Image 1 (cartoon, rainbow, N blue to C red):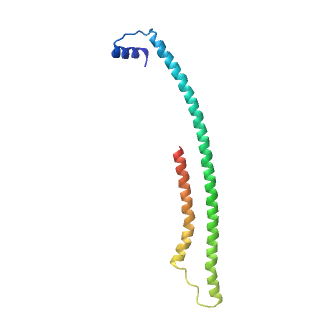
Image 2 (cartoon, rainbow, N blue to C red):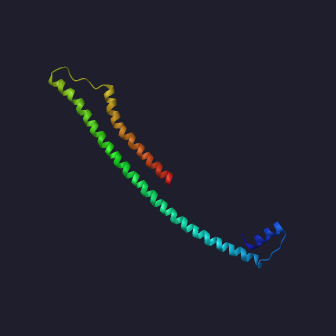
Image 3 (tube, rainbow, N blue to C red):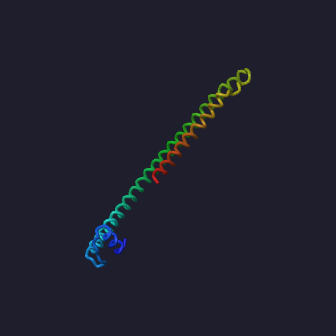
Length: 142
């Protein structure tokens, strides 16, 4: 608002007429200077606090991602070990049946195929959950 607009607003509100050279405008200018210096100080402090917050947040997210990746890697490794063990257990009865010259080994049942499929789906679902969690964390932080 310039001085003429302020004078018009004061005349309308109080009926007191001022000129542009009135000392009251010196107080207005002084208030503006003080307000400007205080807001610039606050802006500098806010910027420093924001940078510190972003650094801490980024560090925490990076730590979380590395821990999640390590856990997922161990989970995938253990899942693979279990799958190999299960495959070895399934192969032993077939080998024993061939040695005994009995009937051909039984065909895999639906439940065993579903079990094998389940062992492959579990790490996939877990990994997808971790990725969604990390994505949501980034979305919340932005």
